Length: 185
Length: 185
Image 1 (cartoon, rainbow over the protein chains, first blue to last red):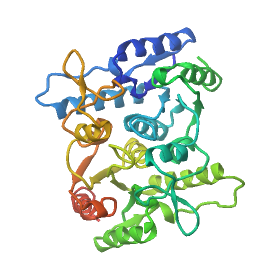
Image 2: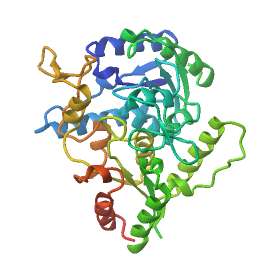
Image 3: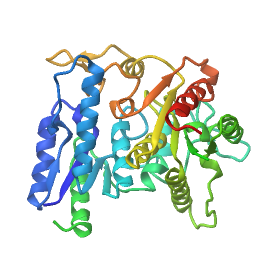
């Protein structure tokens, strides 16, 4: 049975375990096994926090290596773009040749989200390109995030209610549906 | 001659080309070839911005595949953590078995940087763990960024002057020195 690594920042949510179970139920209903990061085998008998973090890292990486595919929650997290841990995992999985699909529980352009973060309209360079408050170029390719993410992965976007921004599963369901055509269960 | 992919958000800097040349000069001085993203062969004869972004993506990925190692500028970018494109590339390169080293032109803990972003002190959950303004757990393992980055990569930290936050090369130089022991030029 094909397995799917369930990447995303909902591991930081108060209902992290329940959210994982919900995703796993959706996977199971269509014939996949969902691998949730919090289910990893982690050696917690370690001396200090950094060693625990390294054990979590190894567990996540082992699950990605095992998985046939990754579905990533790319909803913006503490800033204009996706969660760094999730982005790392997407890159890692793609390099291994895994099928990776993503969803983003908001619509709109990365550049517009950077403008919100910026607080004011952008400055422009001599070529008319947008610059943020630190004078750094704002990429504006019509994508919802950094091009290394959105040029690499098909991202299903959905305008979830703010309270369900991290937890809405309609984008996840769309990924599952697409995956069935790519990697039949 | 070993080659090093020069990952980092300085590609968004006004002096992006000069910064790349400076890194390449440092690489050359110790016997490496530095591969800078902006030097990639990109098909610019495309119809729309997303296709240009995809061409840039393919060019970056091709350079990473060619490279023997990656040195990544992990300095926080538009938020508490590293640039998403750089993080993606670090994950991708590690999955290919490349040597990856990183630097961060600031010191301090990720959790403290999230507190600055948060604007107020953290709330606590029933177990006393820190929660951000969205009620999301703040990881606090003693690292300078998300554990998927700092558990995976040796990161050289340096407290650069604010004006040189993105461009200071002392951390890069430290990476080069370390690399010479791992992958002799």
